[in-house]
Image (cartoon, rainbow, N blue to C red; front, side, top):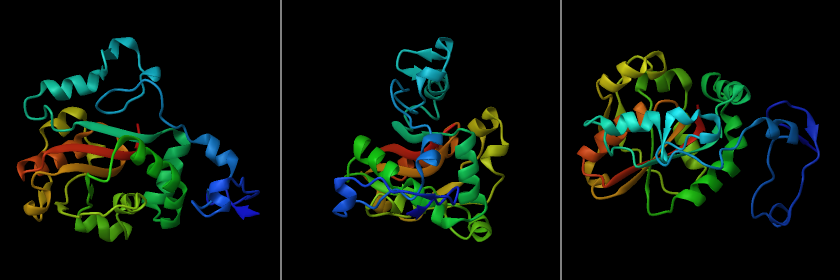
Amino acid sequence: MSTCLLCHNYFEEAHSWSTLFSVRAPDPICITCTSKFEMIHGDICAICGRPFAQLAEVYRDGNLCYDCIRWEQDQRWQGVLTMNRSVFLYNEFAKEVISLYKFRSDYIVSDVFTTNIKKTFQKHYTSNYLIIPIPLSNERLYERGFNQATVLAQKLGQPIHEVLSRFHHEKQSKKGRADRLESENVFQVVDSAVVKGKDILLIDDIYTTGSTLRQAGETLLHAGANIISSLTLMRS
């Protein structure tokens, strides 16, 4: 018997050959909590990974969603983000879990995501990418005690390069889309030699509009990076 990390109820672990022979650890949550997460699959936007099943046809053009079309029509942002892939939809249950993890600093909740974020990485990316977590400002890091993006990056079992720093500005979540498009870039590269000529994979917790990832990507491209992709835990 195990105790679910989220609901704290006891549950019987569903063992497979891989868990029995320690290829991977058993999932730390019960089947009820597992079923409340919505995995992203099927027909998705080629750039941001938004599922088309929940999007009206008017907001789609070919293999791109309307948001990505608008990003690509902006000269500043065109081609900055090559591809984002996310693991789960940011539904109401996911919001509760992220709040527990991110804002109430329950670090151990990150174990819930280990298996699925690693599988998503292996499906879409390779170890050739330079993995860079989106940083917090020093002020935000002090408030939370840890960087949630760095913890998620560690789940991939690949080398991590923390070569970005971030200025403390108003949270992006409080801004409208127009403000995000025109906002001052809050990132800078600490060591350009590390990123020069490299394919970058940015790691973050939530893809909302993509502005944070594109700002970080813009900074890295200016420092000599080759292409910018991203892997996020949630897609709103």
